[in-house]
Image (tube, rainbow, N blue to C red):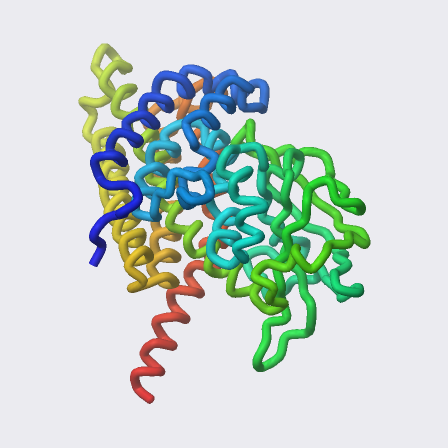
Length: 392
């Protein structure tokens, strides 16, 4: 049973959430076109985000963060999803898949070394897992770490790494041994962004989410000391990746709900005012049907994201529910964005109309933190295995 976050009581969290909502609606939304056209988050918005503690909202308070749990994180994500997704991308990895590896698996020394800077935004962390030939399934990793004295030498190439161009820390997953019946052979390392042998490629040109930055990263004979091995364990990487990704999937589900809500709101506002033959298009039943489908998707997605977050925090389900939420909510957001463009007609295809940007932005959600296809395998396979265990 979820009884709340003792570190951030409900009344405190309510005030923090209101501050975030005001920031999103009054500071970020008026500059969405600027972010899109310049393909960058303005420096003053970044500074405001850092001052509000957004780079560390999910980092424990003892390390300088706000200490929100995943139930509260999901509410944050719904607010952040309402505007340009690149804003969240700026600090999402610090709070999510990279920062949570340290929170969940790092030693006290590693946490003390890195988490305060991550929480303040002085350090931008990148989650270096995906690579050519190994995307949604970490078991296919080719990047290798070989022992070198008391340290390690890392070689390999990572792909589509968020914030790589600004990273002060790469959380790097690498194979230390062949997989066996008792070991995955995957470890995770904390590699400073200025380490010798790291080459960051040029910023990727993407379909959407202008303002977010991804790039390839090559590690060529990058030497790290023993303090870089997360948890001091050469076989912790696969579990750390799966745990961090499962948590991230719930965050992504809630983020998708926020984007779907924005698409719905834009549709309703347009339908209420735009006319066809002198009649508001919102009076047409087929337009109302599209809006009804959008609203139904948002309500279902919000309930599912919140329930998955609750189940994760209580420990009742940290595998199937995160995948189910991520699958449904990101697919729903794509459908809502498509319907929003349809409601707008030709106007919805114009570059400076919000629903056109949302349509492009949300497409990525069905890919990262594990594709929709991977989520289906996790859900279906997990349920079958549960039944098989019960039967035996």
